[in-house]
Image (cartoon, rainbow, N blue to C red; front, side, top):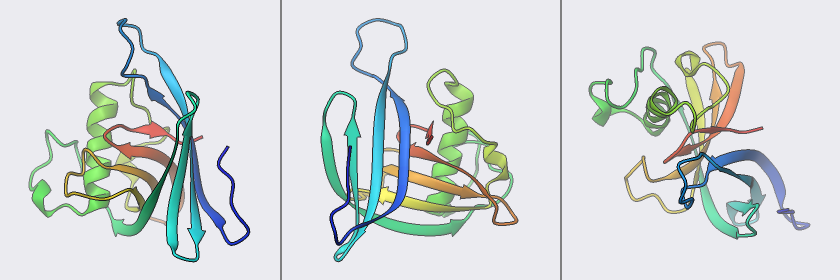
Length: 158
């Protein structure tokens, strides 16, 4: 389990199950993933540990953006070039949860999201689908809806 040092404070946690893409069978198997984001003297870092024993540590960038109403999913949304990072991640999660509900589940109604904090993990190369992030979603009244592990997938944080 990822733990904080004396000069670190945990600011966000995400325990989730992600599809295991390394299986040779057609059955859907999942692996547990624990992500903790820490505030350090030098900024935010994420430590992630999977049930197969791999531990990674990456820098984190936090961005907060409004999310427009009416998002339909990446394949249906128009003008995605104008989307901020929160809208891209929510739109992509809408697509994944609709097209692959057996693999993608966020635990709340994505159509209610009007603001999202994006804890972007690692280096961002401009490809939002390939990025890894923990997304913390809020409704129009700034009420928390929940969080999910997003980017190339969409899985609820427990």
